[in-house]
Length: 341
Image (cartoon, rainbow, N blue to C red; front, side, top):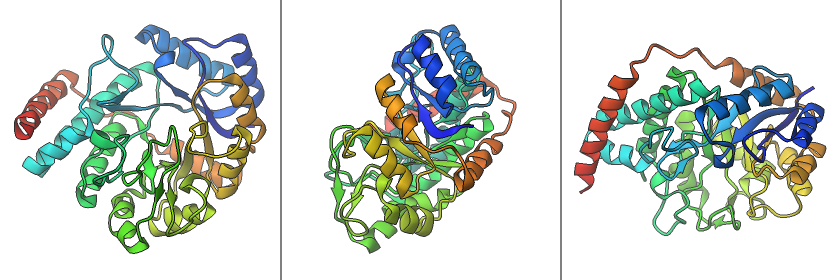
C-alpha cells in the first residue's frame, strides 16, 4: 500500500538505507533537486532506480523546472529557460506572443523531462506579486494582474501537457503578497477578503481544473489568523476547495521549511489534519523522511481518488520539432529583451 507522501533523496544514487526506507514505507512519489543531478545518463538511472525500488513503474517523479532562478536542470547538459517575467513583458507587447513563448518554453522543458523519465513539473505559478513583497517570487511571476497571470499559466500548462508532463499549480491560494521567504520564516498577509478574492485568488480560479496543486505556507489573517494555508482546514475547505474551486490533488509545500511550526512529525500531522492529500518532504534527510512516513496515512479515500485521477490525466507527448521550437523561443526572448530595455 502507498503512503500519502512525496520524498526527496540525498544524492545521485540511493543508499542502502534509502532503498530499505522506500521499500518499507512506499511513498507515492519522489522529487528531484540539484544535489541529485550530474548527467543525463546518471539521472535516468536514478529515476529508474527510484521506481524499481518502490516497485511502482508509474510512480510520479517531480522536479521544479521553471526557468530563470528556479531550474534544477542546468547547463552544460540542459539549456537555460526564461523566467516568468519574460513572458509577462512579451504579453504586454503582444498577448499572443507572450502566450506563445510561455507554451514553447514549457514544451521544451517537457521534452527535456520526458527524456529523463521525469513525469511531473512543479509549474505553473499563479502567484500575483505586489509592491513590498519578498523577492522569493519576484521575476518568477507572470505579472501583477490576475487575468494575465492565469492566461500565461494556462499556456505553460498547455506546453507541459503537450509534452506528456503533468503540471503542479503553485502556490495556492497565493504567495504574491508574502513579505518573507517561507524557507526561513512564516509570513502573514492582512489583506481583506474582498481584495484577496479580486486579485490573488482570482488568478487561481481559472486554473482550478489542473490535476495537482501545491499550497502556500502563508497566513491569511482574514480567514485564519493562526495557521498558514498548508495547515489550515479553513483555508483548504473555504478558499482552496471553495472560493477557488480546486478539486484536484492538493500537496503541501515542503514540510521541512521553517515557515511551519513544530517538529517535522507535528507538521506532517497538521498538514494531513488540515485536508492536504499529500505531504511533500524535500531535503533528503533520512531521519526526517522517517518522521514524515511514520505520521503519514496510507493513501485512501478521496485523496487516493484524486491521486489516481491526476496520474490518469497524463497523455502521451504530441509530435514536436525541438529545433524549430527553440529557434522560435529564442526570437521571442530577443523581442522581450528589446521591449524591456
